Image (cartoon, rainbow, N blue to C red):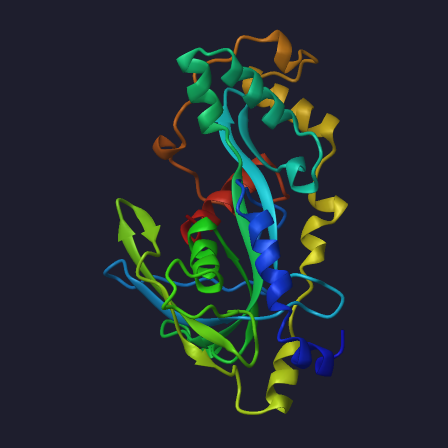
Length: 297
C-alpha cells in the first residue's frame, strides 16, 4: 500500500472495526526483548506517582493490514523457577500451559482452579505511536516509537471506534487525517498503574501537511515480526520448561504425572537486580518481564 492509497482509504476504518470484534477475546505478552529496546517508548511517573503524556496511534505500515499486533504470554513461578514465555495460542496453536490450566480447572478442585488462575495468559498489544508530548522526556516528542500496552488502553481504543452512546461520533484513532491524539493519564492505585482518566482529544490531523505525515509513516516499524517463529519456543520446548518449573527438576516427568504444589503469589516475590552484561538466562527473562509490568494493566 502506497501513501496515496493510505490517504484515500482513511486507514480502512470498516476493516479495523471488524478486526476489533475478533480481538475482544482474552490473554498475554512477549519476553523476547530481554534488555532495553530503543524502538519502544514507555511513560514515566513523577514523584507523586502520576504520569502524563500525549501520543498518537498510527496506521498500519505498508504490507500489513492492522495497526496493532497482539501477543499472549504466561508468567508465573514454581519450585523450578520462573516460567516467562510467549504462548503458542497467539499463533492459534496448542500450548502446554493452556492445556494444563484446562486440566486443572476441570478437576473442579478449588486449589487447582487457583493455580490455573495464577498461570493464566496475559494479553499485550503492540502499535506504532507518535509521541506528541512527553513532559518527563521532551526529547521524545515528534518521534515514532513502538508502544506496548494492555487491555485497558485497548478498551479505550475500542470505545472510540465503537462508542457506547449514539450522541458520540465514532473515530478511527489510527487515522493520520481523521484520528485523534490520546491523552495518557496514569495514576498509582493500590500499587498498579491506572489508566481510567486517559482519553482521546478531538479529531485532528497528525501533522499540518502531507509531506510531514508521509515522513512519519516512513519511520514506522513493522509489527508482523512479533509473530515470527523465533519469538516462540516449540511445543516440546515449552512443555519441558513447564515440567522443570513445576517440579523443580530437569527430569522427563510430564505435567500429567505430577501433583502440582500450591502456587506462590507473584506479588510477594522480591526480584534481584540484574547486571545487563550477563548472558541471557531464566533470571534475565524474569527481570525483563517485571521491568515491563509497570506500563501494562
